[in-house]
Image (tube, rainbow, N blue to C red):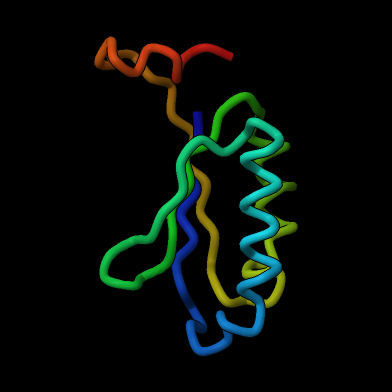
Length: 95
């Protein structure tokens, strides 16, 4: 499981690449890789939770985000090995 942090480094350029970024996010959900996405408050960037992948594949996917390519955000990928989870979220650990 991964947490992808996309922190703004040039927020003023975000509007020019928003459509491509949203399509990139949509594709991640359709591919079954992204399971949650949202903003980091207050308007610091975004975060994504991903699963069903390897670090290398996640890195390649992140490198294709128009926000990353155009240096709108700086990406950080954190890999998590869950050891405890509320049973209501047990499906998150399934591949």
